[in-house]
Image 1 (cartoon, rainbow, N blue to C red):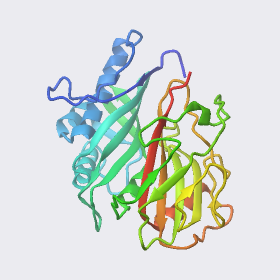
Image 2: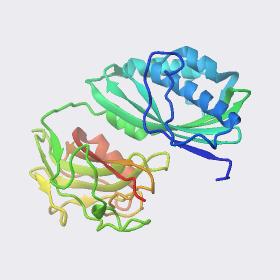
Image 3: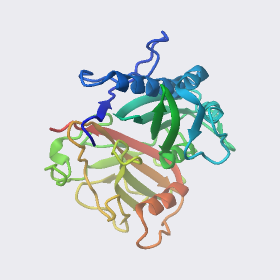
Length: 330
């Protein structure tokens, strides 16, 4: 990264009524190093983010060049400005309360990298599935080339796997709950429980987990541990365990029930890898407990974590989650 590149970390997005302030606004400690040229790029990126945040077409038309090009155009989407307009309208029919928050901007030359976090609730219809209010929470990364104050091209990557898993979760069972005596939902992970690699010096201990309200038709359980804020474009999977006997109600930090299997993580090997957020950043980590419709998953030996999660998602009948933050560390 060159010295002219500016990284702008967004702590939150403002949502107010006036035109001047409705844009998702990056909050920074200082903007002294941002040039006038950088500010133009930042304002354009904010304007386009406001389109996704509000659904108002005027922001897209203001931010995008008349000859705008989508560099990795999804199948069925029109090229040019009409593509994002149609995509936004359709997705808001699925998630009516969709919000978009700028999490990070990276500015360099005529290029802006924008990481957006999309949230809302699945209350519309996705193909033949009617939503039941399931929480939607996923990230996307856009890379804009900006010319003459307009976005000329955009290359984008959405966390489709997370989105589809949320849209395809058919149940909202309030009695199915995941908890821990080690960490609280919405709390913080104690640094002593961090990983012991990449600059972290924790004990890499898996937290104690317990649950209740497992659906009556569940036949086994699976658990995943995921960092959605890892700077990879698709997060980072820290743990996958499946074929947990359905009568299990808790896991201690040292062992797993007989018959339980572990899938490969994003370290390309099985096992539990505790949080280790990069210096100066706060990451959100989520444990997801899956209620499965089969006793055993027929996962081929040696496959990637993505393939294992595919098998888990395709046999999940309900989920319970527990999320906590880690960082910032010095």
